[in-house]
Image 1 (cartoon, rainbow, N blue to C red):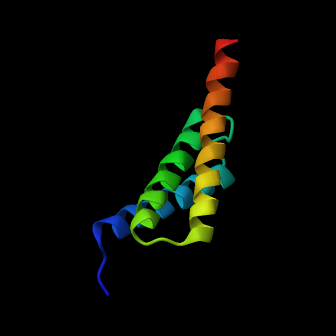
Image 2 (cartoon, rainbow, N blue to C red):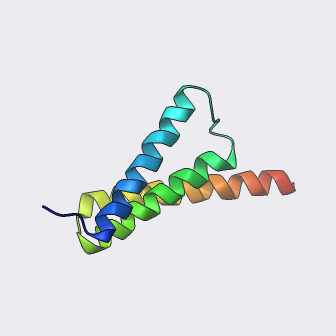
Image 3 (cartoon, helix red, strand yellow):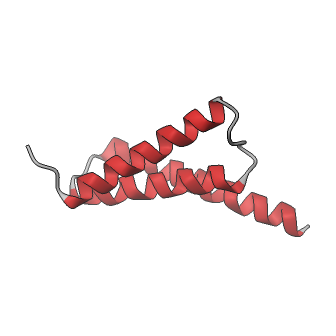
Length: 83
């Protein structure tokens, strides 16, 4: 079994999401910070790239909403900051 370039991107996305969650749990990042949502959005996007080439519907649904919620968090941060 070999890894295609999109598998590597998907694996990197998973690593980013897991590390972001771990940093949240140990207090190195706060969920209110834009970095938290940005890292989650990047991770979900990389996973979605991988899923485009190796489709799995339930995983696409989860990652789509993970990305959508992360983008909402980023927007919320900048909207709150501008107000």
